[in-house]
Length: 142
Image (cartoon, rainbow, N blue to C red; front, top):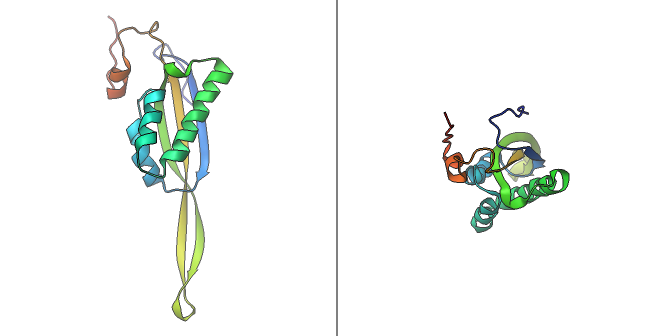
């Protein structure tokens, strides 16, 4: 985990889900839509998307926000999805019986999802807004 320096806008809150029964490719398709969004905006996007991967990801965002609220006393409205990553997990291997005594292999992939939320505090850097963080622009005072 990265150390928090002076350029970090607030504390980082992590939530990790391991061995989720979906492929990492399908989870990344959903994750790329919420990267850089605020907490409420990410939940709204996940609720309206028609993919099955949205439900475990929204549960994980709820869990990260609950961690922030309970452990650090942060307000959920001030949270930003700063970093999201999906890694491939173990592959469950099964056999599908086929004709004439043959067996075809079936691979059931899993993935690990990590979500990091940050607090947005306007007192630290009043120039930088949520939209500029989402686009990757960071302006510093000289």
